[in-house]
Amino acid sequence: MSSHSKIEKNPKFGHLPLSTSGPLETTLTGSSAFTAEERKTFKLHGLLPPNVQTLEEQVRRAYEQYSSRPTDIAKNTFMTSMKEQNEVLYYRLILDHLKEMFSIIYTPTEGEAIANYSRLFRRPEGCFLNIEDMDRIEDNISQWGEPDDIDLIVVSDGEQILGIGDQGVGAILISVAKLAIYTLCAGIHPSRTLPVVLDAGTNNQELLDDNLYLGLRQPRARGEKYDKFVDTFVEACRRQYPKAYIHFEDFGISNARRFLEKYQPKIACFNDDVQGTGAVTLAAIMAAFKVSGTKWDEARFVLFGAGTAGTGIADQIRDAINQETGKSKEEAGRQIWCVDKPGLLLRSKKDELSPAQMPYARDDSEWEGKSHGDLLSIVKEAKPHVLVGTSTVAGAFTKEVVQEMAKHVERPVIFPLSNPTRLHEAKPQDLYNWTDGKVLVATGSPFPPVKYKGEEYEISECNNSVTFPGIGLGAILSRTRSLAPSLIVAAVKALASAAPVVQGTGPALLPDVTDVREVSVRIAKSVIKASRDEGLAQEKDIPVDDAELDEWIREQMWDARYRPLKPVGEEGSTALARGEAGPAAHRRANFRL
Ligand SMILES: NC(=O)C1=CN([C@@H]2O[C@H](COP(=O)(O)OP(=O)(O)OC[C@H]3O[C@@H](n4cnc5c(N)ncnc54)[C@H](O)[C@@H]3O)[C@@H](O)[C@H]2O)C=CC1
Ligand SMILES: CC(=O)C(=O)O
Ligand SMILES: [Mg+2]
Image 1 (cartoon, rainbow, N blue to C red):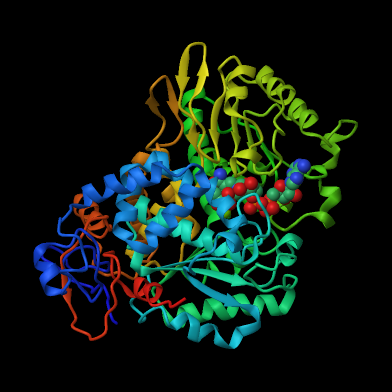
Image 2: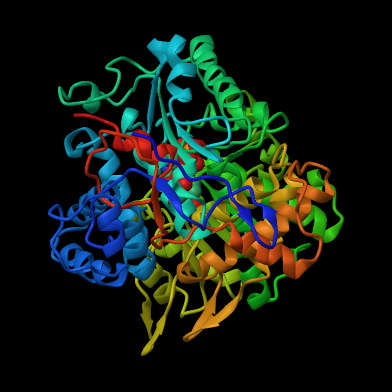
């Protein structure tokens, strides 16, 4: 069997890096939406009931089936099967019910699916690499297509999945979910992507003891062997898919930033937890300050949980203060108080701090005679305008802490960002109640609207899913050689310019998920321009004119609709659902279990 989406000539732009229109060559067969002509061409009569349906009718039926599933995890499993059967229908169904389904295919429900991966498993989806088979990495990677076929690789080693820790091989599902978000929110062609898990073992005893666990049953590798594993993977990607942009997701605290610093200058890569989270949080803070009138030179920030995400956020805030006020980065860092397990980060504890935490360690002399071991004491002293949680400590923002903060600032900005929902540092409803409705809040996972004094307030979702799709789209279309920090700054500015918007009764600090496709265009445009200005863009045909650039981006965004099909005429094709055909789809379809 062979099927692939060809790179086409567009009448206006000529060659386009991504193909999103025109007929697909395919041998794939099946689905009630095949036209009468296609049924004839592909000899489908007798394999299908006679009524030809539209995609809209299929969506209606699929939505009824979805709605009949009794629990969120059952809905998630249904959607996983749907994706296997018909990718176009899967994406159309979600796009038509984006707000409702986002939390089913992404956080929080995807976290549950990942934790139960080896029990819910039906079919493998993605590329499984393991540390004991290092010699085979290049070969395994090469099976997913020709060098031009893959634009985007999402990879995780599963050590710190969302806030639920080490999930071993189940991490494949975070790579799969992030890629689905790329397609939904930025129109990245689903067949030109590759989800990867790097299985280096696991330290999750429950998984090691589970005889159904599908990953390597051994402790997580560290040190030289582990680094060689990641290096071998990156080098194999560079050789096999030289144009692909690599997104690192949910690596552990000791590795995430280390690899970002190692690879960022050399290749087009991105760490979502460090950079994506930092970018979306900064944009939400900028929007909040437009509402509260807080000035950057006086703003104070307490960041609770100074790990991968927390220090990524700290860096973005520090750089924003530096840009907005002209203060040095060192001076800017003094407006930020980072708190971790032992309390405030202090210089005297430097041996216990990571390199990412070091710039934020406070001088001990500032805190002589003052308590700095708990959040309440730190809030009392620092009097922050902004309090962000990336600690995985549910309920850490207590009534006392929040009310202490509200004593010192008119509009406390509070972002409990730990996922999944059950780990949030506070619930938005409580934050409203405790601050007389003055809080400006955004959360890591979706929350229903808050009811306060007879009004309803939408809660903005401050999740890196608002930023990474647009950044990725910009990086891919410009074929940026690397994602320099200035490209992230460009993305933040584009996002911040889209908020706040007045939504119902209150200001939304970030655009709603239903607008995120438009937001992605905006972000991608900024990233592409920045890449070109920095001399990093390898794509030669980027339009100079703004309106044309907009059109050029939109032309290359994949949408969930059926494209005409034409046969490639190979013998022996099997009956498969009608979906998008491409090399990755072909590999998925070819599994025999
Ligand atoms: N909303 C969003 O877009 C994102 C949210 N997150 C969430 O942030 C959380 C943290 O993720 P990562 O930074 O990747 O994990 P991490 O493990 O790198 O960082 C967590 C940090 O919290 C600290 N911590 C743990 N208990 C604490 C306590 N009692 N007091 C103070 N600090 C404590 C840990 O020592 C660690 O430094 C997760 O729940 C994750 O889902 C992460 C990335 C994006
Ligand atoms: C959203 C995300 O990337 C996380 O919670 O890890
Ligand atoms: Mg993550």
